[in-house]
Structure formats: structure tokens, C-alpha cells
Length: 273
Image (cartoon, rainbow, N blue to C red; front, side, top):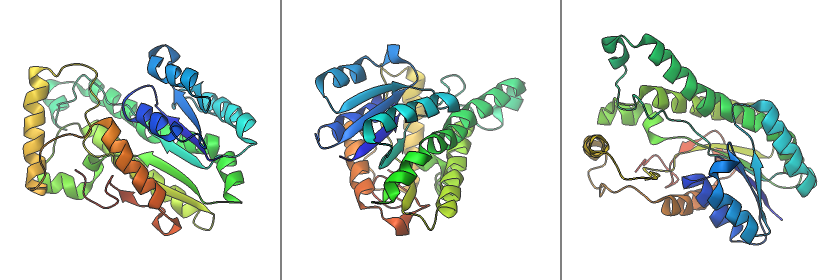
């Protein structure tokens, strides 16, 4: 019975991973959430499907993740075949700043906060998650190839940033670029083991839970114009979480040991939209 752990699964992409994976009754799927109170849809899945289990842990809390790993081990016999690091943070304030806006506005403390908050969740949080579940992954790797998938972002890609001149959201982008190196370091550390580490971009996905503000619409149009410079054939439309996860699962199924350490998109290559 293949086992999956999905962090950040209360909504959006993470919830879709749990929903699509658990549709196969041969899978056992663990949805890890920071706040059980905000996971009503996930908890309904747990009620409706016997192969879904909801666990509480913040990815910035290593001990909480270790406790979650212990709970998983009790139900899987101490193994785990797939870890999907989906949990992430992006501040709502100052999300449209460029890297020099903080200094222009005299918001140096805000710069520090945004950088540290993003790095703590998006980079260190992934390290915590991998390390907490590593004993289970190692145990499973004795019999099959295990896969550790960490969701990154195309806007953490240096080439795309330069080509499209995307200059917004520096803290988030920098934390995702750092995540790609984290994945490479794990791939190098465990290069001789039966483990595959991949940084996977989900594409441009609409995960909004409410209507966009006028500023959101304006910035999305500017963002889309920048991406068109790199991808002139792109239709300008964001993916739904359902479509993105369907594509990502196709990539996850195909990656092999030769791909370990790669940073790829939902298309399985370097096409980010």
C-alpha cells in the first residue's frame, strides 16, 4: 500500500494532492496541516475516505513534524514511499514590493521580517520535513525507490527572472531559489541511495480563496506581460489546483534516480507556465 505525506494540505494544491491521491484506494495518504481549524475540507475527506489521515504539524516546528512522523510510522509499519513538501509561506503585505522598495520606504525591519519568514517556512521548513520523515523514507528505500518532492516555483529560476524581468516578491522568490539548493544538497548526500529528490514547480496556479482586488488584477496583468516575453505562446491563464496537481502527479510518476536533484516544472522540463 503506497504511502504519501503531503504537507500544507488544508487547501489549494495540497488539498488537491490529498484528494487525487486518495481516489486510489490502494494508497494511504497523510495530510499534514498547521491549523486543524482551517482544514474543514480535508477533515471531510478523512471522514469520507478510510485511506486519508489528517495530522497537525507546522513545518517550522521540527518536533511537531517528528511527532507526525511517529504517527505515520504506526500506520505504515515504519515506512514512507512519498513525501510531498507543499507547505509554503508568502506574505500578503508588501507582496508587490521590489527588492529596493523596502529601503525607499525606510522599512528595513519589514525587509528582515519578510526575508526571515519566507526563508523559515519555505527553506528551513522543507529541511525539517525531510529530516523528520527521513528514517521512514530510508526504511522504504530498502525495497523500492522513494521520492521526496519539494514544491518550488518558476519565479525562483534565475534565467526566467532575467529574461522576463520579474522583479516583484523578492523574499518569496529568494526563499524558493534557496529551496532548489536544499534539494540539490539532499540529492548529493543520498546519491548512492534508492531515493529521488526533486524540486517541482506547480506552474502558475490560481489558489485564491476570494475575489482579487483591483491591485491584484493590475499586478497579474503586468506579471502576465512579463511572462509573455519568455513564453509568447502562453495563453495567459493560470491553472486550477486540480489541473496543476494532475500534471505534477504525472511528473512524479516518471522521475527516476537519474533525475535526483533536478528543478523541473509541471511539464517535466524547464517550461514554467
